[in-house]
Length: 74
Image (tube, helix red, strand yellow):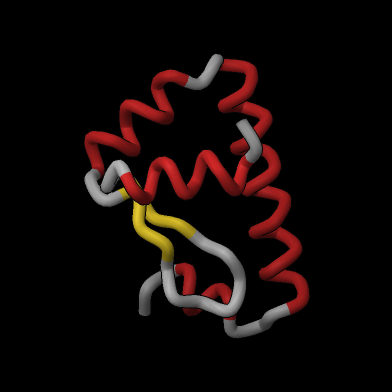
C-alpha cells in the first residue's frame, strides 16, 4: 500500500488526524496508539529514525536561531 493510501486509511480509522499546516503532517489521536506504533518498530529502525530526528533538530538549531526557545516551550 502506498504512503498516501495508508495515511488516508489511518485517518478514516480515526487513529490519526491531519494537522492544518503548510507541510503535510499528522498526529496520533491518542498517546496509547502512538506508543503501540513506536513499540512495534524494530529496535534498529527506531534508532535510525531517532538519529534522523536528532540530525533534523541539529540543522534546525543551526539555521533558525529562535528554534531553541520554541523547542524548550518557553
